Length: 246
Ligand code: NI
Image 1 (cartoon, helix red, strand yellow):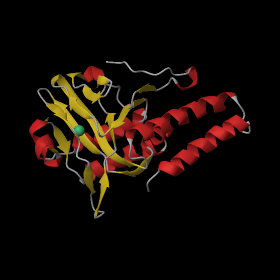
Image 2 (cartoon, helix red, strand yellow):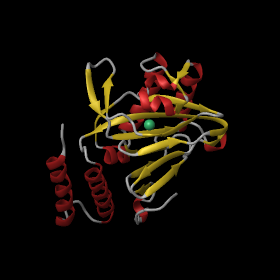
Image 3 (cartoon, helix red, strand yellow):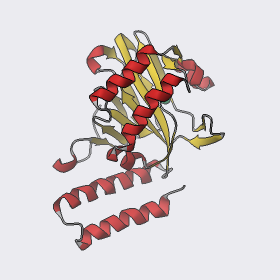
């Protein structure tokens, strides 16, 4: 359901903003999708219940690449490199720490009932934990490859169904209830991961994202030395300074 969509000026209409859901097109280039899929095709898939908490495990029916396996690390590096160069992801998530990406697969009959992701996650091999503030799903299968398999995200505006072309991503608050609808045909492959944001609170992160987008739009029309442009930019950084937790 696509509502709560904000007015977006033409210069930044290449992505869509729903409340706190941010869709990011073309995170992966076609050759990167091919590389990631090539790695996953050779990898061993295990039961997804392995990485779920007790409650989520009862709701989860899918397959995953083993966490920390060579395949997961290699494919994860491609995803993280792509995200590192993505201005929209960085503006929307304001990442402090990113967990290594995981990879899941839903074949016909598989689904993930409504659940909330665990708040605290161990960083593999680092001996430390992080807070999951922002969830990201990167779609790896073209939508025509499967029926069903919508990612359904519930927020205060209602429920939103997301099914994107391969290489596109959706960023949403880890605080939201979400599910993956049952696959009725084909196979849906995706990467997902959690980010600890410098901004813990969803609403503050959303305000900064809005402000950053507005500044981008204003800067496209006015020179950077205009006092208004300088003032807005300094306002953004001072808010970030005020709110960021490192
Ligand atoms: Ni989840």
